[in-house]
Image (cartoon, rainbow, N blue to C red; front, side, top):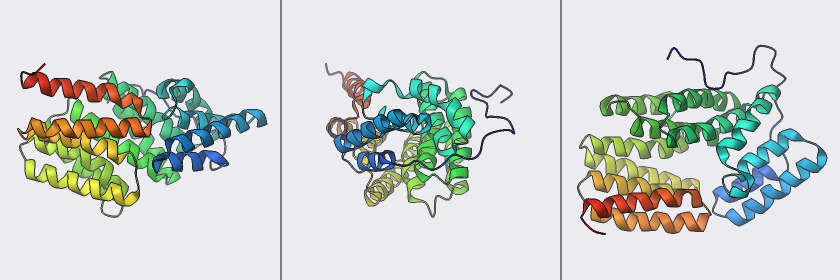
Length: 275
């Protein structure tokens, strides 16, 4: 792009590759992903406390970053990721780098800075592939899809790019990739008027997410489905989907998603001339 990367990586003298996350952090993340946010929060808080008492800044950074998705008292995900990223760089923690870059990129997306988000997500994918970290790979690809949908890329080119990413990152053999990237692709297809294909993509994404046991699919699948319904000319079908997403967001403790859901609901009502 001809611009300096938002977060350049370390030079050739980078430290040895970091050890894998240990203790209660991986278990806490798994519990949260499987629909037990309270138990996940408890385990991650214990992991953070143990790391702080042991004087282990790497494990503390990993636990704190994971906690931001469940407990806003630990700071915003982007702020915590910005602080943790230099440490992940120094220790060669590819998985940590990937996770931090995704969280920062998501903040940039919300601010409309899609070019910077794209740079960060490219870096996240590189490190997720290096660590063979499937959750981070899927997170990054799903976020790329959001930028292709929300950003300045023309729709036809964005659809082609999504399909290229599915092929390049093993979409045929990786259900996590198809589930997360398939949702923004469905919206892009609906923008092209390819409504039947859009619904097929969403149906596949929902089936795969259920099979993987992703609790968050109860939140993000109806959100994307509501957008597809609006673009398909059936906004009335979108309203109950948004209500479904709101209930899931509250149950999962994903309170950060609730303002966006409220805005989408208000937009549909205003378009229909309702208060």
